[in-house]
Amino acid sequence: MTDPLDVAGLQRRLADFAAARNWQQYHNPKNLVSALSVETSELVEIFQWLTPEESARVMADPDTAHRVTDEVADVLAYLLQLCEVLGIDPLAALNAKIDRNERRFPI
Image 1 (spheres, rainbow, N blue to C red):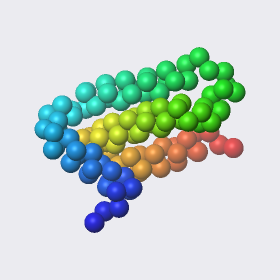
Image 2: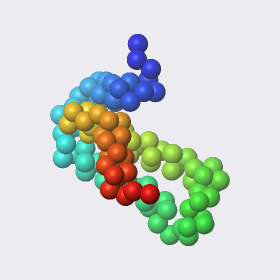
Image 3: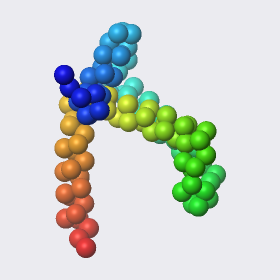
C-alpha cells in the first residue's frame, strides 16, 4: 500500500474522493486551474492587509493558523489534481525548475 503522505498517495486519495462523488467530470484542466486560483486568492486574503511583521507571526494565532493551514491544503489539493490530469510529476517539475534557476541565477 502506498504511504498516503507521499505525492502519489495523496493524488490517489484525491482521485478516489472525486470518483466516489462523480466529480471527475468537473476535474478538467480549466476548472482545476480556476479552482486553484480561487483557493490561492483565499490564502492571499488572509495576508492582504497585514504588515510584513504581522505576516511573519500569522501562525501564532490558532484561529488564523487553522485558516492558513486549510487554505494551503486546498491550494495543494488542486495543484496535485491538476498535475495528475496533465500527467506532470510535480516533484520532478520542481526539481527541474530549481536546476534551471540555479543556472539562470548563479551565485
